[in-house]
Amino acid sequence: MNRLASNVMLEEKSSLIPTSRAGEEALDSGQICHSLLSDLSVSADGADICSVFAPLHFEADYNYPLLIWLHGRGGNEDHLRDVMPKISMRNYAAVAPRGTLPLDDSQNLETCDEYTWSLGNANFSKAVDRVCHAIEYAKSRFRIDASRIFLAGSGRGGTMALQIGMTLPQTFSGIASIGGALPRQGAPLAHLAASRQLPVLLSVNRKNESYPDELVCQDLRLLHIAGMTVTLRQYPAGDALSDSMLSDVDQWMMEVMAEQQQASIIGC
Image (cartoon, rainbow, N blue to C red; front, side, top):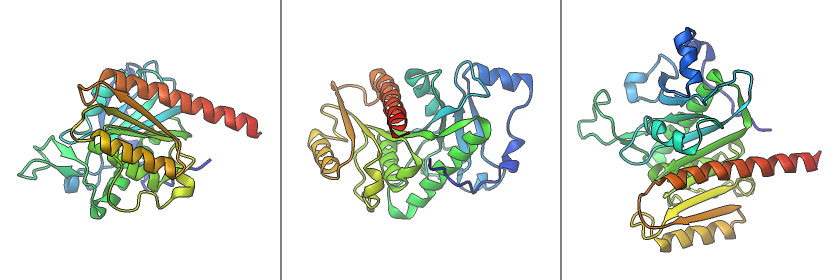
């Protein structure tokens, strides 16, 4: 089992965990709540800001699977509020970090509410840090099964999920990209041997201008040549992020966990 090493002081974050009955009720209700990973450097670039999802009927002693959600272009960490009810209200704890690049021309982090993920190599390490911080904060809030951590995103966030997942393949149980192409920068297949053990879900709309069918075919061919396990699901032309796409992410994650559990039993 591979665990992600923490570089965040857990004691700094403990004071941010609600201890009142109101806080417990928020967890029980499956409510989204804004949280800071620490009380440091928030004003610098918003790196410590994320949204956290507590599953419905939260059980403190249960080891939950964790879903990290990366929003698309023009979104922010609040997108978790929209997607989790359509994925599952019960099956996962979830966390969504804020994108690395504000889209507001003023670059005012206090008023900007639209962000994206910069795919350039110079900003990639910042995105990795945000995902790692988000995982560690989720671990401080819930009991997380470190062998069942999934990374998913839509659009630009889906591409970033693929890039981070294939860079740190031993950290995740699977990657899901909805409408996000394989990254064309960096070396996404540099860790190919480990990445071959990482299931990938590609969900795409037909006639999607930002991720056309020709590019989907190229990506699928490349992943198959690389020997990776890929599930491709195509949907009719329409919304870039439909309810059926999100519910299918839940089904796919459940299938991956069942297969991994069966493989573990066979290997014993």
